[in-house]
Length: 467
Image 1 (cartoon, rainbow, N blue to C red):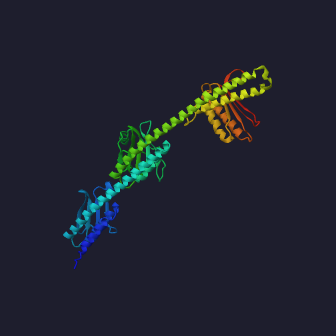
Image 2 (cartoon, helix red, strand yellow):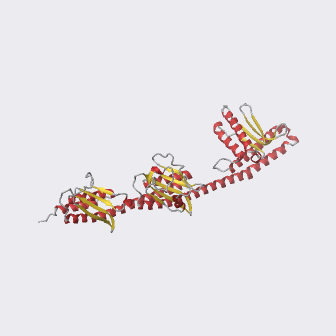
Image 3 (spheres, rainbow, N blue to C red):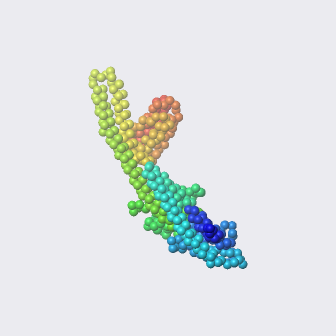
């Protein structure tokens, strides 16, 4: 006949098995506390942790049993994880109840030992999951940055991904200012973002000194920490401020604040976030270098096209014009003289337009155009969308050097009005714009003349101003 195990031993085995079935730390600790109360018949049980910041948990109690009774028998047993104190199991019986026995204590120690093993496994599993998420996040950020995002989009990508990985209330990027402080330039938050972008850390702040030195800063409560000086600090609690540093250069700072009252960051989270920031900084540097190479390739290609236009097209057009001009002067060319004259004029106009195109190619692709030529070309390019065709633009004289900015501004205003008027008239197929920096007034004064004409029969604009 087989011997049945004692009822308490059966309950212990059940409690041990229950403790090891979950891979979530909070759930595992709840199983431990509930199992301890059931094994010993305690009316109240709790597990307090020695280092709440490490796992983000301070105490787990038996559910729906209120606070620790002021009186009654007590039983305490430490919980060790790999010989390191994790916390303490505390049990209380009802006032006037029977004291806990040696068998109760022995059963509780067995449960505490199994709890230590289960907690260690949960920590390993959670650390592995966190590490996997952060590695995948860093890889996703690197891939996003190296596949064509602009500088502002790149910073927003880093802030957004880091916020999600850290479970933060916001992800913000700060960059150094000319005054020696730091300013929030990008913010990712599902909550109220008002006032975050543009907030600054003033020069001389202790936090700033650490960040500029490449050291991460970990803050328990942003609202009360005297090192924090931004105007939005009252919104946040625990925070990490991580330098974005690569190749010995500080790109900025990644800040990951949580809400006030949220759990602090664990040591594992701090380590993984710091590693993420280092990887993100390197990806930002590589992305910036890639964009620089692409811009250089564009500049080089534009220079090559401009050289080809100048060396081949302009010279051939000029040579053809000279040939037609000499043909027109021959005595026997009387019957085609008008036709040759129009061909010469057309070639001259084409040469002017090709030279204008060469100038446009020499303008940087990004940013506003420089000089009066570039600004005029920008206005005519904008008008092309309204007109349905690009205006023909000609320049005479050194308009960029001869025409001062104040006169150029007035000229552009007049050009803009003329193009707007032309765009409002139907049936146009050609608009000619001419800027002559050597035009003189009837009394001989030097000036610049703007002429805008079209084939719609409207009055041509002729605008002049002294230089």
